[in-house]
Length: 289
Image (cartoon, rainbow, N blue to C red; front, side, top):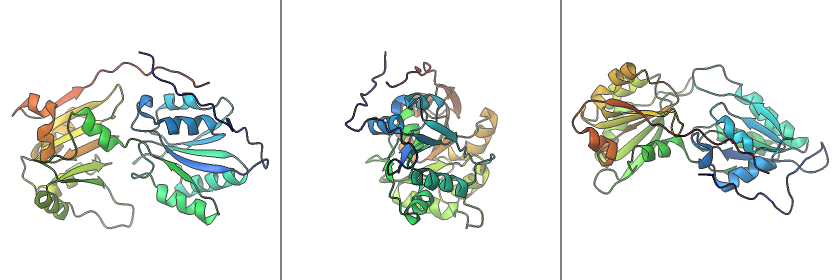
C-alpha cells in the first residue's frame, strides 16, 4: 500500500534563505521511534521547508527523504555509550544558523521533550533571543506498548505511568529504584524505562526491593523498525533474559501489571521469557515534491 504523502504547498513555500535575506527560525521536531510513516503531518512539513537540518543518530535515514534537495543536512549523532557530538557544540550550531537567516530543524528521535536535552537547547536559543517551535513526535515508550498490544494505563492494573531514564547524568544522584518501586506498587503505576540496558542489573535489583519478582516485564528493542525484537516475562527474569537474547540499545523496558493486558503475554501464558522478532515490510523510500 502506497503511504499517504501530504501536500506541502503553502503560501510561503520552502525557504531557500540566502544568508542575511530574512529572519531565521528554529523548530525542534520529533521524528518518532523509527518508522517514517509515524511522522506527523506537521513534522513532514517542517522537514520539507528546512534549509538546515541537525539530525540525531536515532532518526531513521528514510525520514530525510522528506527534506528539500537543497537543504544542508548535518548529522550530530547522540547515543548513550557512544561517541557523540558535544551538546554545547550542537547548541552553538543552532544559534549560529538561525542568526545567519537559515530555517533550522533540529530533528530528534522520538519526541523532543522526552530525554532529548531539548530543555538545554531551548534555553540556549532563548538566551540568544530566539524563540523556537516544538513539534511533538511519538515517543518510543508509547510505541513499545502499542507494539505489545498493551495499554500504559488500565482501570484494573495501572492508574498512571512514569517515564524514567535508566541512568543519571554525570555528577547527578542516581535514581532510588527501590523507593520508585514501592511508590509504583502502592499507586499502581506502569514504569517505562529509557536507556536502561547498560544499568539493567542495578535497575532490576532496586525494583525488586519494592515489587514482586513475578511483576510482568517487557523489553522492546528497535521499536517500530523491521528489526524490532521483544521479550515478555517477569522482573525476576529480566537480566538473564536480556543476556540470553543479546538485547541491546536502543530499547525500552516496561514494568507493571498493566502488561497482563498484553495479548502477547496472554499468548505466552506462564511460560518464561520469549524473544520475538516482528517481520515488517521495508519502508518505502519516497521524496516529497
